Image 1: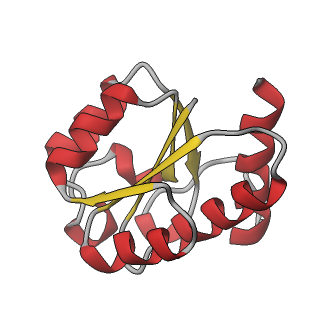
Image 2: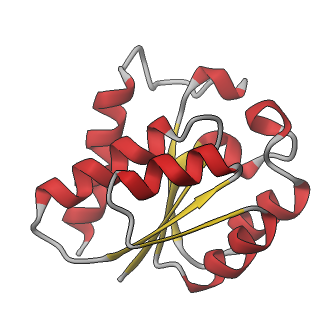
Length: 135
């Protein structure tokens, strides 16, 4: 199983997911971190990603290989994450056959009805559980 974690800015969300995934230890998977910038990639690599790359083409290539894609909801929209997500990246994620676990954070400018006021920690835990339970 290949889980591609895509994040931008400082990579905090992706790093939290990777740390929590590795800690759960129940299900083995290759974790590929793809940052929209080098700071995000570096943070996710430090968190324990098995492989890492930065930029548009790595998003495109790894979205094709992924069983799961995890990241902020903004990875589906061009110009999200303060402009770090390109239209090509968003299209690659949207067209991927992978299951997508999108974490709804308001900083992307997207609001999801029914989500409530969960913390980032709670949302990341939920994403880890979703993948673990679907296998």
